[in-house]
Image (cartoon, rainbow, N blue to C red; front, side):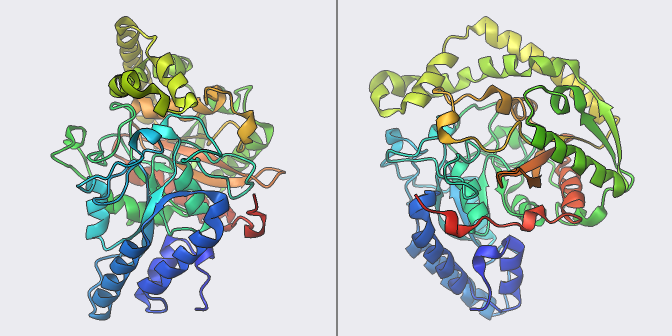
Length: 454
């Protein structure tokens, strides 16, 4: 096979299948071989569903041979964060608590992907129950960053990030990458962390890939009442609309001028903003003073995690990892009054951000506070407040957000910018991300597999 699967994004695999340059069985077997070769070091998979994947690939090939192509995901090998149910396949949540748990039903998003003809390679690593600290040992390590295996991948969808970046799947579902509007994608059949904050979305190598995955999984589900107002757009049609004429708000004080922002990340972000200006966007500094309260709001609301795990903690606390136990017990310290105050402040922040988004098409700012940390640099609780600053507000508000590569640090670690848009206007977020991506080549860079050594 002339094609190098490890270098292709999801679109590359999809196009090769459509042109019949590659069969789904060939693609699936190649990914399985790459997993067998590289994942003993990268540890992105908890469970590899080789037999299932090959059977699904064979069925996809038969349909494609008959001229029946369900769409761009037909025959494409993908993988799922291991808190998303697949009937008959272990779903551990990255925890000894559920080490032997096997769901009997597919999650809503799993059914959607199967209907689209996707092939399931397996279940991906994560921070324990999406809330623990990154670990390298034990039965459920959180994976190693393919750009530098001494560093942790972003949490909590660590395995999804590793597998997508390392070419161990064509695309993945996790909780970051492109974070859809809250209520756009059903969480039915997905292990919860915090009911009012949880999102499920694509993690891929390119914006088109994310748009296609989102198209497959978005929509109302009677089993998840948060989706009752889901407003689905065509996420692919407007991708090439470009930046010309768009108004983008730069959250300068809260993010760009934040003293804890790494200088290299700041420089890369400012350079990326200049690229968007050259592409025809108008950028202006904007501010939402209430964002200063976001982390104080986020912490009490995470008591939802304690409520979910409380009974199991009382019965078998020793089965939880130390990092997760610590974090959950901390959330239990908040009172009902704390939570109610947090909800009022959450609404206040939302009003300010909605007001900003009535004046601009999207908000832009650096994607994270710093490049990936070494495992030993994480605090024992797993909390990294500077990093949470760049993600927590948007989970609180349920707004769509996408992160797109914007350069590399001097140590060869990827850095990014983040785009946030109006509720249910995920298409605009993806359009801005693509406008930047199509005139840069950061998303085409691949980690060096020769560095994937213990």
